[in-house]
Amino acid sequence: MTTHPKIATRDQWLAARLDLLKDEKELTRRSDELARRRMELPWVRIDKPYRFETDAGPALLADLFKGRSQLLVYHFMFGPDYQAGCPSCSSIADGFNGIVTHLEHHDVAFSAVSRAPLQKLHAFKQRMGWTFPWASSSDSDFNFEFNVSYSEEQERSGETTYNYRRSDGPAPAEEPGSEPAWPTRFAEMAGTDRRTYFREAPGVSAFVMDNGVVYHTYSTYARGLDGLWNMYQWLDRAPRGRNESFDREPWLRHHDRYGDLTAHAR
Image 1 (tube, helix red, strand yellow):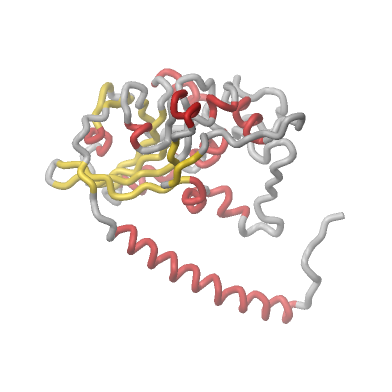
Image 2 (cartoon, one colour; image 1 turned 60 degrees about the vertical axis):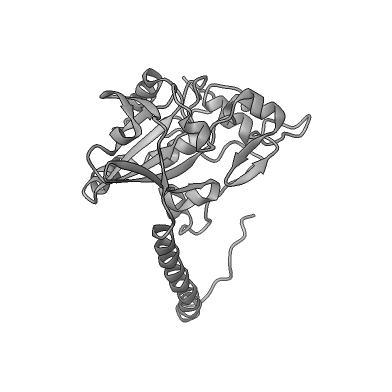
């Protein structure tokens, strides 16, 4: 039986809603303050010549700016051994197409970056109907140095860092004898195994170009991406919220795989 809050009159609902509104306004003011503090973070000069493969050919980090003074990068989980993008990253990326033009008109370039070779990114991008820029960092240390990719040696030793913390390893443990948990199912959707899947991680990084020099200004990971996940922003306002369950079939899929429980990474 589905549970729900008490049934109320319109006046009772309005009183509760106005009480909640006070907290929502406080959260908005707090969010504005955090945005200001992000802009006040110091800049770190980037001197390393990170190399990427793009639709326009080989590129350096500076080239991803495309003549603009700011660059936002989404670290998309799509490793070289994946056959499809991470389903969580893919659900976030479903909102990218519409924002790129708006960002560019605010002097901000945008690019997703993944370690998979460009031809794999092209194929998946076509499958998903995406048009946003997507670069391959397959011949670069970029992902590793921004703590969104891990080598097999790092995984075995447990010497990984994510979201500014040391970790025992990128892959969450699975209880012996249990049915496949969400990490295993997400890995299956990406066409790989769970250990390989968790050698990649999601994140966002921001850069600025000043007098021809590139600086790193900000990065966020894990739950820091929630505010950029359009689907969750809508679900957080729905009566039953995100409707996540970590002990059943994954609560999200690639957008062309809903209703198809067996076809994951085709």
